[in-house]
Image 1 (cartoon, rainbow, N blue to C red):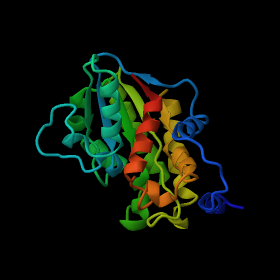
Image 2 (tube, one colour):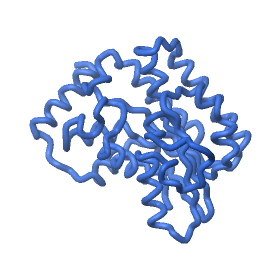
Image 3 (cartoon, helix red, strand yellow):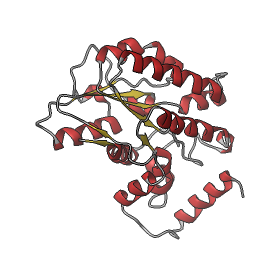
Length: 255
């Protein structure tokens, strides 16, 4: 049985309640079991934390003017806002500053085009990157001609450029994900999309960064509620999906 059929069977079995309920903390811990061991980022007093990526990170954030850190509108309404709120709640004494500069529709090369203004100029101590779904998805829908080799080359070039400009920055690499069988995500995604997920994990290994296993956590979460509960289109999270992502991200980033 191929991977697509395996995943379809997994979803079907989950929908009939054949998998025992487990808690969200257990889901997150289980997803991290396969992540690189011992790699976590610790946030220090006075740190600036920047979220970068595409629409999943953007999540409707306000882009009007130059926002101060910790601005709710500028953080969007997704996992970046939720993770920020939790860390600010836990650490009111640390003077933490959070920014979100995700831009809907971005692929790696488009993120790179705005990198100086949207990343280097902010001078973050912690830089979280979630990018990759559009680098594949747009080859199916928008006529984009990039390949997995394009994604890897563009991503490595961007990370090298970042480390050169910000040698002490602590990177967090997030896994691109998709949930099969929900609107936008069908059999045409596989097996090619899995190469983008693997490339992100390899990037985390190469740059000694924590890897946030979003695909693994979604795959486990659909045993507790239907896939559309977590993501209405297979790519963008619901409110519950964003909360799940925030909880997962916080496993990699310790206050």
